[in-house]
Length: 255
Image 1 (tube, helix red, strand yellow):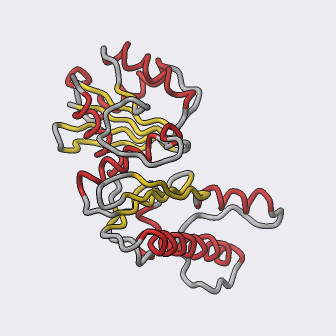
Image 2: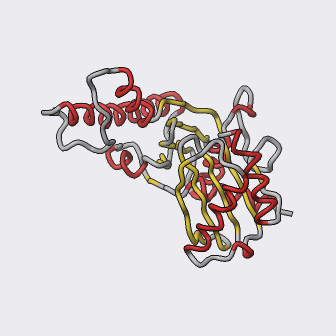
């Protein structure tokens, strides 16, 4: 079985695959200073609770945008699973042409998403990843990665509003019952939710105007299920896109 970890700035998603079948996935908070032993204890607990055998893991792939977590994760894999993990770094075989001014600047999560899209969906395509930052990535008809857009995530926007405006409360990020809020909380929720829908739709419209027609727009990331249903330009929501991409990359690079 293959263990994959997608380490983001806010959350870490862990998943276990049996071949191409996703058996389990877990969503954890990302702790930048978690030690290798803490990671090991956490993995043992997750496997134990679901009656899974850590000894059945035959390969590990990790995508990380949090450098302080990399060394402890690598050591955890050595000590608790007895193997070297595959980190998605420059030099890993991706099968992806990256047309970026400096290809090494493209985040590992964006590379992994692109790999999964090429395996699953028709191109040209755009991936919208609703994470700590919201990223938009453009793949052309030949499957080459052309570049994209990075915007502040909805969670960051919400936190900034709370921290910088003294009288405004912290609010839950949900679709409000109406656009015209009749309370401060609903008014804030409306501004955050519908303002973000406007951001996503506006960027997608401009990307298509600049590139031309696309066949598929895929939404992924933690907030995709919340936001994508009100984004008319999104064709499909795939919450496991990054996990699938990690599995595919491990298969391409093993041995």
